[in-house]
Image (cartoon, rainbow, N blue to C red):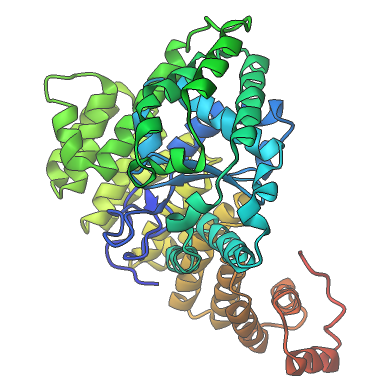
Length: 467
């Protein structure tokens, strides 16, 4: 992967830019879409969505909640318990209740198995599409922008997601199920009704002019009124979002606007607006428009008020690192990890910075931080990639090759995983756990006959496998 211009705060996994798992970049102009990883936003989304998933009988840990960097209003549920939310949709919601209504509706599709039963899904031509899409999601979750973009792009994923449309009957069932999930979690179904009602006009548009969401989720006045009638009869219909939920929703929207639409953010969040979300959006927008000094001044003002906010420290470290002030980035990134030690993406930031310093002790510490991040998030491919760089920098060829194998294993590239695992075995002590791990990767990555012969000759073929 390319290393220039990597470390920004959001990870926009776009086809036109090799960005890191905790980095950000403008969406690729050609596709206009990307997949985003960000600890703060993911935390807010899961805080809202996980209770709904539980009410739907889904294990929140099994649901892959993807944040899609696309201005198009869209959301989707797919096989493998995948749920995607476009940033365009999130930015259109006025309240957490509206967003939760959409999440509940999509959970209705997942719990009802609708992605499996869609007519398009059963077509033979869709099988390669679904397989490739699944691999792309794995790569995205692992923090591999090039691999994810290539797989997802080759699947025609974002362009053809509308083909996975639902019938009006399935839409009605998902509506009713979603209302039940909202009620079960003590929330009002009003948000779901209002969100759909806001876009009632889409019903009369030609299909080509409709938002993608309403092409795959047919909307009608009859459906909206049926939904409203049932929602109004539920006990929690008049329940309002808590001030805390409203504040988090505004922060999430401000952050997304600052990163994805910085010029718009500077207009929307005027200097006269002294609220935290507005100042946060402006600080990020200054950073994105290459005004680091102005961004740092704004971040420091926010930190003076919220010194224990790990995401502000993370942002400060990212700005400093991005603009070549790597030694200065270390302290704020350390602070972010100190304040939120259970966030692996923050450790990746710190580890990357330490590895980039010309100090052997710092590089070794960076390796430790990256290894901790992998223990916290075993599917973090970006941490493995950075570990490969760090091991190579310290002359540990065997471990560098093993880390590269781990990286490829996590992003769903078995061929490269096997190749580097075989190379790693040549450099590692045969009695070490690392050598055995390399053998495991070979065994689970479609080994060739020659590979199997070599493993059998060494007596390594009985090693345990992780998956």
